[in-house]
Length: 434
Image (tube, rainbow, N blue to C red; front, side):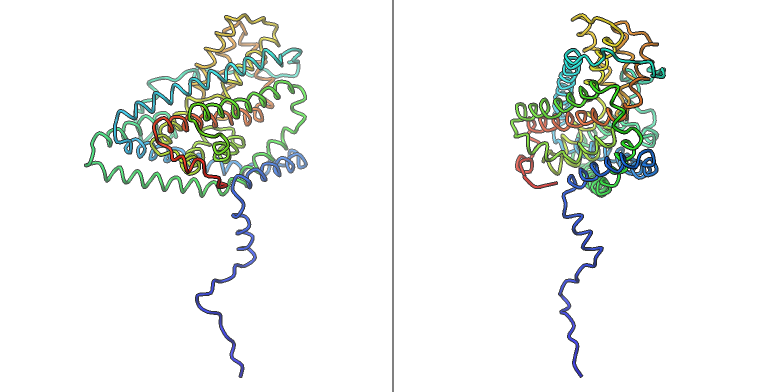
């Protein structure tokens, strides 16, 4: 009888068909999978039409998963990062530099928006006849109320997903651990471990990004189509051109001239975050991804990541500032208002102020618009007509302008990390695909 020889016990088992498919899938860098899904989703949505809305739940589920991670990630990473500073004075140093840089990039964004509006004149000949007026209630959104930053009940703030109170409490708790010293070392180690775990949770969620992005883009394209830009083409091109200029030129120069680092590794490293920002239209939803790429791809250490990025999500809105400035000139041209130099300056200052207070959620900038338009005589009724004109295609424009919000956060974090010697330059310059 012929014996059948068995393979050696240590010989690896060959993967089945599903294993081989999975191997090929994960062999492709995540950012490439997301871009492919984005393009495919656009084509499918365009061909499918309104029926593409039936898969919107997939994209909504992906966004919910990211939002689920925001509050616990912000809490543990800020506490861990502050506790790791070693010197309490460094927290103030990092915070002040971060805020000043955010105000600097936001001011530039306003100038870009106003300049584009004055040069391209997108409001000339705008037809509002088909617009349905939309009345805005701005009383809850304009400005940051100092009393809202301090939570009356920290557990309620965490449960409600309130970002600013969570940041305040995390900074306070981290500072207390830092001041306590050696006795609080076990608690600091606990938060450090929790931070690593939460970043791993984000990495797991991001593996679902191609499917979520596909569904979100297909839904937008299927329900709006390309024809939506026919009546607002010049304004849309201004938003696209201004956002690209702010993201790649302004923020690229910030990294190159202020952090003294090459820009190609920067944009290669943050691709995942940029694509998620584009597909979700939410700086808040992008925060977990931004924190992950900042640490893993840019080499920024937790002390800066946990301070600069959550702060940027709430106060750094370059895309919003650019958009509001652009819409202000659009409204002036559409309603026949001749703007003086003093009015441009007033619009600029007001836009910076309201941009800082804009919620990091889709289309929030429209709710800040009324406060700017009143500075040069646009009435509430005219504002309602303008918003009704913009609203049908604001989702697509919002996707575009969320990207510079995100690149601003990461550029500023890179600069501050470089100034504070809190960045691993070798990791930053690494050419690996991510």
